[in-house]
Structure formats: C-alpha cells, structure tokens
Image (cartoon, rainbow, N blue to C red; front, side, top):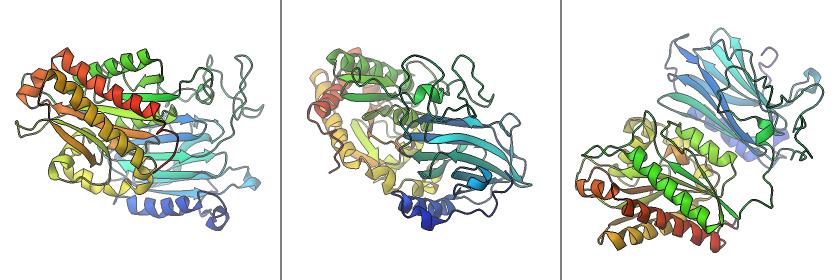
Amino acid sequence: MEGEAGERVDLTLLRRHLGAFLLLFCAAWSLVAAPPVAAAPGISRISDIRAWTNEIYTRVAIYTGDEVSWEANTLRADPLHGLPPRIFIDIRGAGIHDGILHKPVEIRNGLLRQVRAGRFDRDTVRVVIDLERESTYRVFALPAPFRIIVDIDGEGEIPALPVSPGPVAAGSSPENPVPSPAAPTASPAIPPSFESPRVAALPPSPARKPRVSVMIDPGHGGKDPGAIGPTGLKEKDVVLDIARRIREKLLLSGEFDVRMTRDEDVFIPLEERTAMANKGSVDIFVSLHINASRNRRAEGFSTYVLSRGASNREDLELAARENGVPVQKLQGVKFIIDDMFTGARKNESLRLAKTVNDAVVRHVSTRYPGAQSNGLKQAPFYVLVGARMTAVLVEASFISNTREEARLRDPACLDGIADGVVEAVRYYGQNGILAHTDY
Ligand SMILES: [Zn+2]
C-alpha cells in the first residue's frame, strides 16, 4: 500500500477519455456520498470482498457490516513502480479480516487485474482495484448490512477464444499466470459463488445466443420470506413459482435465452442480483414481487421502474420493505440513484413496465374478472440500481389482501401472471425495441 499516498489522479489527462466527465462526477459524488464516521476504530471489520465480472463490466462489493466512513478516488498508472491505474476506497475506523488482508482477489479479465486490501495507516483500510486501463466507475454504499459497491465500466481487451480448453485467458502471461479452474489459487476470502474470470471472460457463441436474453429475478428467498399473507402464504414461494412458469413459457417459444437469479429457496443479496444480470449481459431484467400493505383492502397489480424517489408514501414504504431497510435509510441514500443509473434504459424500461402491467392484468382477468391495475410506477428499488439493461419490477397483487392471497394460491392465477410477463417480453423481442436505441 505504501507509495500511493498523495498520488492523486491528474484529471487533465483523463479529460481526453470518453468517461472523463463521469470520473469527475464520481469523484465529487463519492465525497458527497461518504457518510459521517459512525464506527469506532476496530469495531467494524471488512468481512468480505466479492466481484462479479465480464470483459466490459465488473461490480465489486466490500462488506463491512456496520456503517463506516469511506472515500473513493483514483490514481493514474505509475510505470516507474510498475503500478497500473487504480481506483481506491479508503475506509476509516474499520478493521479488516485476516483472511482478506494482503490476499488479492484476482480478476484479470482485460478490464481489471485484481482487488486487494491492506492497512493504509493506523485508522484506514485501503481497498485498491488495479485496472488494466483508466475506466469509468460509480461508487455508492447500501445500508443494512453496510456494503460499498463499485461498478466499473470499460471496453476491456476482448480475449481470443481458445481453440481448445487450456490455460489461455485474458491477461495471462508467464509473469501473471491465470489459475486454471481445476487448480484455483483464489484467496479464501473469495466465496464459492465467485466464478473464475477466465470462464467469465469467454464470450458466448454467437451461433447459439438467441436474439433476446432475459434474467428473471424471483425476489427474496432463504432467510428472507418477503411479505407474508394472512393465512401464511410467503412472497418468496409465490414469486419463485411464477418465475419458473415464465422461464418455461419463454423457453418454449424458442426465442429467448432465459436465466434466473435463483431457482431454489436461497437468499441472494440485492446487489448480487443486479450484478448477475449485468455480468450476463442480458437484455431484459424482470424482478418479481408481491405487494403488501397495512391497508388490508389494498389490491391490484403495479409494475415499477427505478427512480430517485417515490410519488407517494405507500410506494416509498414498499421500496423500503423490498430493500430491507427502514424508510429513513431509504431517504438517506436517495442521492445514489442518479440519472446515470436511471437514464440508460429508462425509456425502454418505462415501455416494458407498462406493457408488462397491462398484459398481466389482462391475463389474470380472464380467470378473475375485475383484477385491478394500479399502473406503471416509479420508486427507488436497490435491485434495479446499476442495471445496464431494460429493467422492471413487478408487484403482482397484494398478499396482505385475503382475496388476493387466496388467488395467489391458484396455479391458474400464477399462470396468468406468467403469461402476461411472457407476452410483454415477446412483444419487446419481436418489435425490435431492444435495438439499443434510446428514445
Ligand atoms: Zn418483495
């Protein structure tokens, strides 16, 4: 870590690059985003560092548990000392788990080299992301549990496809060999779900890739049941059932590559769900949820896109519940959701959300006349923050409403919801709205 103090990036150099404005913005942004010191030294500890990556995108998540004071910045390459461009995050008043200290998380995907962490000074832990080249990045924190998320964009070197399985991969060299999957040399800090960047860097075969790829995200799971109905029906079970129906129907059409963030009753953090969709470079992300309200008469279907705020108290409370944080916390991190996050695919997401909601209500109405549409809405859902594709979140009726809970036990209703989503997604695929054009 030594030798990096005071080596602040020369932004004049970066202005020549496409992402210079973004970098400038992010530097200012990270200063604003840094919360006040909330932990005494040694109490919070960096417990895990995870990464999800492909050749043009990486999300790094740094988990500290309790809230910490942090600041992100960049350093340009230092050829004299053999150092690449870096993004670093200084975390104050925190310790670090021995399993992570000085044990880099290797990436080497043409965009990033590695993520490493060490004690910068007595009160500061520095996490350094070694880049292959200067890249744009966004950094923000999510509460409960506290984690710092770094999203890095860039056009890394596209690795050559190996003619046969072998130890050839992006960034490999005799000096920096890439570990083979059979003999991983990954740090113990890397969780089992971390996929080898060698595997991740391989582009899919164009011949086998359908035109449109979809990631279905059944909300909650495992220790997080989501909302629970008056007779005990759990949101996590309903949405998984619907997700499987959607997958089956989309695959039947033969037009889609379909993936799911979970296909069993497991807990997956919100930031990981988004990262899975980004890493997979999918075209459409559909997060599935069931609404709930203290007003037991509340009913109907809504479909949401990401926005900084909510139009009313109910939507704010809904987003807080789905994010697993109190409403006050949601207000506190409002600034992390900027136009950069919502603008990239905002118009397409709005169109898809409206199409989904209309189609779902229409299909459910054939079995249950009078199914209510609450329409297209916007709210700050963490699972949509940083999504690089058309992304919507469906709230498929109210599990807190006795009549709607009973309806959600009916496979025909779940099938109707799935049919609605499938119809909307197929409409998108067939009408070429995914032609990477923003309106
Ligand atoms: Zn939910």
